[in-house]
Length: 133
Image 1 (spheres, rainbow, N blue to C red):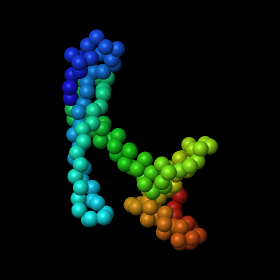
Image 2: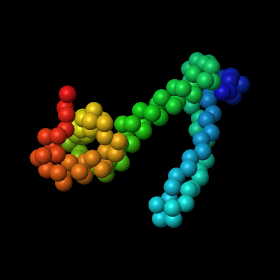
Image 3: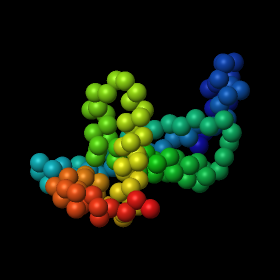
């Protein structure tokens, strides 16, 4: 965490920024083509209005990414939401995708893409096996 007072003095941001948080990330991703692990590193900066303990900031950032990984990544990776061409009321379809993902989570599905495929192949019998409540 950094105190930005000197850097932001005499700017319009001085009263709005209480702390700057620097996060270094290292990610290991398996390359499907080679089977080898690729390592990437990046640095991200977050801005906070008040000075908080570093542990609390780290928890807030991890909690944010937990939501990103649990919801948005599933909607994009499994439901291909970013490739969707719906231009009229796209929010309705986003809610339907979230609803479908929540039903699958309620049924303890770990792999949403695989479950969607199995339900599609399984037909009406597979649909009847899904619990909604």
